[in-house]
Image (cartoon, rainbow, N blue to C red; front, side, top):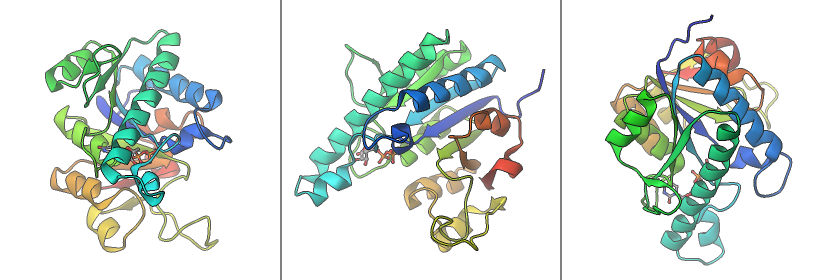
Amino acid sequence: MMTPVYKRILLKLSGEALMGDQEFGISSDVISSYARQIKEIVDMGVEVGIVIGGGNIFRGLSGESQGMDRVTGDHMGMLATVINSLALQNSIEKLGIPTRVLTAIEMPQIAEPYIRRRAERHLEKGRVVIFGAGTGNPYFTTDTAAVLRAIEINADVVIKATKVDGIYDKDPVKYTDAVKYDTVTYSEVLNKNLKVMDAAAISLCRDNKLPLIVFNSLVEGNIKKVVLGECNCIGTKVI
Ligand code: UDP
Protein backbone atom coordinates (compact mmCIF):
# COMPACT_ATOMS: atom_id res chain seq x y z
CA MET A 1 0.00 0.00 0.00
CA MET A 2 1.20 3.54 -0.75
CA THR A 3 2.26 5.52 2.31
CA PRO A 4 0.86 9.01 2.83
CA VAL A 5 3.39 11.73 3.65
CA TYR A 6 0.95 13.44 6.04
CA LYS A 7 -0.63 11.93 9.13
CA ARG A 8 -3.18 14.65 9.78
CA ILE A 9 -4.42 17.17 7.23
CA LEU A 10 -6.81 20.08 7.10
CA LEU A 11 -8.63 20.12 3.78
CA LYS A 12 -10.18 23.44 2.74
CA LEU A 13 -12.97 22.96 0.21
CA SER A 14 -14.44 25.90 -1.63
CA GLY A 15 -18.15 26.51 -1.33
CA GLU A 16 -18.17 28.05 -4.78
CA ALA A 17 -16.73 24.91 -6.41
CA LEU A 18 -19.57 22.93 -4.86
CA MET A 19 -21.97 24.52 -7.36
CA GLY A 20 -20.39 22.62 -10.25
CA ASP A 21 -22.15 23.78 -13.43
CA GLN A 22 -25.09 25.19 -11.50
CA GLU A 23 -25.68 28.88 -10.71
CA PHE A 24 -26.34 28.22 -7.03
CA GLY A 25 -26.47 25.49 -4.42
CA ILE A 26 -24.91 22.06 -4.17
CA SER A 27 -24.08 19.85 -7.15
CA SER A 28 -24.60 16.20 -6.24
CA ASP A 29 -21.79 15.22 -8.65
CA VAL A 30 -19.25 17.52 -7.00
CA ILE A 31 -20.16 16.59 -3.43
CA SER A 32 -20.10 12.87 -4.25
CA SER A 33 -16.69 13.27 -5.87
CA TYR A 34 -15.41 15.05 -2.75
CA ALA A 35 -16.79 12.25 -0.56
CA ARG A 36 -15.16 9.51 -2.66
CA GLN A 37 -11.82 11.32 -2.60
CA ILE A 38 -12.04 11.81 1.17
CA LYS A 39 -12.84 8.13 1.70
CA GLU A 40 -9.74 7.20 -0.32
CA ILE A 41 -7.42 9.07 2.01
CA VAL A 42 -9.21 8.01 5.21
CA ASP A 43 -8.77 4.41 4.04
CA MET A 44 -5.03 5.13 3.80
CA GLY A 45 -5.02 6.06 7.51
CA VAL A 46 -4.91 9.84 7.11
CA GLU A 47 -6.73 11.88 9.80
CA VAL A 48 -8.89 14.42 8.00
CA GLY A 49 -10.27 17.75 9.23
CA ILE A 50 -12.30 19.77 6.72
CA VAL A 51 -13.42 23.37 6.42
CA ILE A 52 -15.89 24.04 3.65
CA GLY A 53 -16.84 27.54 2.45
CA GLY A 54 -20.28 28.94 1.80
CA GLY A 55 -19.83 30.97 -1.39
CA ASN A 56 -22.26 28.74 -3.32
CA ILE A 57 -25.05 29.98 -1.04
CA PHE A 58 -24.21 33.33 0.53
CA ARG A 59 -21.28 35.67 1.15
CA GLY A 60 -21.36 38.57 3.61
CA LEU A 61 -19.71 40.90 1.09
CA SER A 62 -22.39 40.30 -1.55
CA GLY A 63 -25.05 41.01 1.07
CA GLU A 64 -23.30 44.27 1.90
CA SER A 65 -23.17 45.26 -1.76
CA GLN A 66 -26.97 44.95 -1.80
CA GLY A 67 -27.31 47.25 1.20
CA MET A 68 -27.36 44.62 3.93
CA ASP A 69 -25.59 45.10 7.24
CA ARG A 70 -22.18 43.39 6.89
CA VAL A 71 -22.28 41.56 10.20
CA THR A 72 -25.73 40.12 9.44
CA GLY A 73 -24.48 39.10 6.00
CA ASP A 74 -21.47 37.36 7.54
CA HIS A 75 -23.72 35.52 9.98
CA MET A 76 -25.72 34.30 6.97
CA GLY A 77 -22.46 33.29 5.24
CA MET A 78 -21.39 31.27 8.27
CA LEU A 79 -24.78 29.53 8.35
CA ALA A 80 -24.28 28.71 4.66
CA THR A 81 -21.07 26.86 5.57
CA VAL A 82 -23.09 24.77 8.05
CA ILE A 83 -25.53 23.76 5.28
CA ASN A 84 -22.56 22.66 3.15
CA SER A 85 -20.97 20.88 6.11
CA LEU A 86 -24.12 18.84 6.74
CA ALA A 87 -24.43 17.96 3.06
CA LEU A 88 -20.80 16.81 2.98
CA GLN A 89 -21.21 14.83 6.22
CA ASN A 90 -24.16 13.05 4.66
CA SER A 91 -22.23 12.18 1.49
CA ILE A 92 -19.18 10.91 3.40
CA GLU A 93 -21.25 8.86 5.84
CA LYS A 94 -23.10 7.23 2.92
CA LEU A 95 -19.70 5.74 2.03
CA GLY A 96 -19.39 4.30 5.53
CA ILE A 97 -16.95 6.81 7.03
CA PRO A 98 -18.01 8.19 10.44
CA THR A 99 -18.06 11.99 10.29
CA ARG A 100 -18.77 14.72 12.82
CA VAL A 101 -19.71 18.36 12.22
CA LEU A 102 -18.43 20.76 14.89
CA THR A 103 -19.65 24.33 14.64
CA ALA A 104 -18.09 27.56 15.88
CA ILE A 105 -21.61 28.92 16.49
CA GLU A 106 -23.55 26.65 18.80
CA MET A 107 -26.50 24.78 17.31
CA PRO A 108 -26.51 21.57 19.37
CA GLN A 109 -29.70 20.19 17.82
CA ILE A 110 -27.87 19.66 14.55
CA ALA A 111 -24.12 19.59 15.29
CA GLU A 112 -21.62 19.43 18.13
CA PRO A 113 -20.10 22.67 19.37
CA TYR A 114 -16.47 23.21 18.39
CA ILE A 115 -14.25 22.06 21.25
CA ARG A 116 -10.62 21.53 20.28
CA ARG A 117 -9.99 18.48 22.46
CA ARG A 118 -13.16 16.85 21.23
CA ALA A 119 -12.11 17.46 17.62
CA GLU A 120 -8.74 15.84 18.31
CA ARG A 121 -10.40 12.83 19.93
CA HIS A 122 -12.66 12.33 16.90
CA LEU A 123 -9.63 12.52 14.60
CA GLU A 124 -7.66 10.01 16.69
CA LYS A 125 -10.60 7.63 16.39
CA GLY A 126 -10.51 7.89 12.61
CA ARG A 127 -13.60 10.07 12.24
CA VAL A 128 -13.64 12.84 9.67
CA VAL A 129 -14.23 16.19 11.38
CA ILE A 130 -15.95 19.02 9.49
CA PHE A 131 -15.56 22.44 11.08
CA GLY A 132 -18.67 24.50 10.33
CA ALA A 133 -19.55 28.18 10.78
CA GLY A 134 -16.05 29.46 9.99
CA THR A 135 -14.31 31.10 12.94
CA GLY A 136 -17.67 32.12 14.42
CA ASN A 137 -16.78 35.78 13.84
CA PRO A 138 -17.79 38.21 11.11
CA TYR A 139 -15.14 39.86 8.88
CA PHE A 140 -13.23 36.59 8.52
CA THR A 141 -13.17 34.03 5.73
CA THR A 142 -13.29 30.27 5.75
CA ASP A 143 -9.67 30.30 4.52
CA THR A 144 -8.68 31.92 7.82
CA ALA A 145 -10.91 29.44 9.68
CA ALA A 146 -9.13 26.58 7.88
CA VAL A 147 -5.67 27.79 8.87
CA LEU A 148 -6.78 28.50 12.44
CA ARG A 149 -8.27 25.02 12.89
CA ALA A 150 -5.23 23.42 11.23
CA ILE A 151 -2.95 25.06 13.80
CA GLU A 152 -5.25 24.16 16.69
CA ILE A 153 -5.44 20.46 15.75
CA ASN A 154 -1.71 20.29 14.86
CA ALA A 155 -2.34 19.38 11.24
CA ASP A 156 0.79 18.71 9.16
CA VAL A 157 -0.50 20.73 6.22
CA VAL A 158 -3.42 22.76 4.87
CA ILE A 159 -4.61 21.51 1.50
CA LYS A 160 -6.64 24.11 -0.32
CA ALA A 161 -8.87 22.85 -3.09
CA THR A 162 -9.59 25.28 -5.92
CA LYS A 163 -10.87 25.21 -9.48
CA VAL A 164 -7.40 25.85 -10.94
CA ASP A 165 -4.39 23.58 -10.71
CA GLY A 166 -2.12 25.74 -8.54
CA ILE A 167 -0.76 29.26 -8.05
CA TYR A 168 0.20 31.31 -11.13
CA ASP A 169 2.15 34.55 -11.48
CA LYS A 170 -1.01 36.05 -13.03
CA ASP A 171 -4.57 34.98 -13.70
CA PRO A 172 -4.33 31.91 -16.00
CA VAL A 173 -7.89 32.45 -17.19
CA LYS A 174 -7.05 35.93 -18.54
CA TYR A 175 -3.40 35.47 -19.57
CA THR A 176 -2.24 32.57 -21.75
CA ASP A 177 1.42 33.18 -20.78
CA ALA A 178 0.72 32.81 -17.03
CA VAL A 179 3.33 30.58 -15.35
CA LYS A 180 2.49 28.12 -12.57
CA TYR A 181 4.72 27.95 -9.50
CA ASP A 182 5.73 24.54 -8.13
CA THR A 183 6.74 26.15 -4.84
CA VAL A 184 6.45 29.72 -3.64
CA THR A 185 7.11 31.39 -0.27
CA TYR A 186 4.48 33.02 1.92
CA SER A 187 6.27 36.35 1.62
CA GLU A 188 6.18 36.15 -2.19
CA VAL A 189 2.45 35.41 -2.05
CA LEU A 190 1.90 38.47 0.14
CA ASN A 191 4.32 40.82 -1.67
CA LYS A 192 3.20 39.90 -5.18
CA ASN A 193 -0.42 39.85 -4.04
CA LEU A 194 -0.95 36.41 -5.58
CA LYS A 195 -4.58 35.40 -5.25
CA VAL A 196 -4.32 32.32 -3.04
CA MET A 197 -5.96 33.11 0.27
CA ASP A 198 -6.64 36.38 2.03
CA ALA A 199 -3.69 38.05 3.74
CA ALA A 200 -4.88 37.13 7.26
CA ALA A 201 -4.88 33.41 6.39
CA ILE A 202 -1.49 33.57 4.64
CA SER A 203 0.11 35.48 7.55
CA LEU A 204 -1.26 32.97 10.04
CA CYS A 205 0.27 30.13 8.00
CA ARG A 206 3.61 31.90 7.73
CA ASP A 207 3.81 32.86 11.41
CA ASN A 208 3.07 29.26 12.43
CA LYS A 209 5.25 27.61 9.74
CA LEU A 210 2.30 25.67 8.40
CA PRO A 211 2.77 24.36 4.84
CA LEU A 212 -0.03 25.01 2.38
CA ILE A 213 -0.75 23.18 -0.86
CA VAL A 214 -3.08 24.63 -3.49
CA PHE A 215 -4.48 22.21 -6.07
CA ASN A 216 -7.47 21.47 -8.32
CA SER A 217 -9.97 19.28 -6.49
CA LEU A 218 -12.31 18.91 -9.45
CA VAL A 219 -9.98 16.34 -10.99
CA GLU A 220 -10.90 13.17 -9.14
CA GLY A 221 -7.94 11.47 -7.46
CA ASN A 222 -6.02 14.70 -6.86
CA ILE A 223 -6.58 14.75 -3.09
CA LYS A 224 -4.95 11.32 -2.83
CA LYS A 225 -2.03 12.45 -5.01
CA VAL A 226 -1.43 15.46 -2.75
CA VAL A 227 -1.50 13.27 0.36
CA LEU A 228 0.99 10.88 -1.28
CA GLY A 229 3.37 13.80 -1.82
CA GLU A 230 2.86 14.13 -5.56
CA CYS A 231 1.91 17.77 -5.24
CA ASN A 232 4.63 19.15 -7.58
CA CYS A 233 2.99 17.71 -10.66
CA ILE A 234 -0.53 18.77 -9.73
CA GLY A 235 -0.38 21.79 -7.46
CA THR A 236 1.68 24.50 -5.80
CA LYS A 237 3.28 24.26 -2.37
CA VAL A 238 3.61 27.40 -0.26
CA ILE A 239 6.46 27.22 2.26
N1 UDP B 1 -17.69 33.99 7.21
C1 UDP B 1 -17.52 34.79 8.33
N2 UDP B 1 -16.58 34.43 9.26
C2 UDP B 1 -15.80 33.32 9.13
C3 UDP B 1 -15.95 32.53 7.97
C4 UDP B 1 -16.90 32.89 7.02
O1 UDP B 1 -18.20 35.79 8.51
O2 UDP B 1 -14.98 33.03 10.02
C5 UDP B 1 -18.77 34.33 6.23
C6 UDP B 1 -18.39 35.40 5.22
O3 UDP B 1 -19.55 36.19 4.98
C7 UDP B 1 -18.04 34.60 3.99
C8 UDP B 1 -19.04 33.46 4.08
O4 UDP B 1 -19.10 33.16 5.48
O5 UDP B 1 -18.20 35.32 2.82
C9 UDP B 1 -18.70 32.21 3.30
O6 UDP B 1 -17.36 31.86 3.43
P1 UDP B 1 -16.27 32.03 2.24
O7 UDP B 1 -16.59 33.25 1.43
O8 UDP B 1 -14.92 31.97 2.85
O9 UDP B 1 -16.55 30.72 1.39
P2 UDP B 1 -15.85 30.17 0.03
O10 UDP B 1 -15.21 31.33 -0.69
O11 UDP B 1 -14.82 29.17 0.41
O12 UDP B 1 -16.96 29.53 -0.72
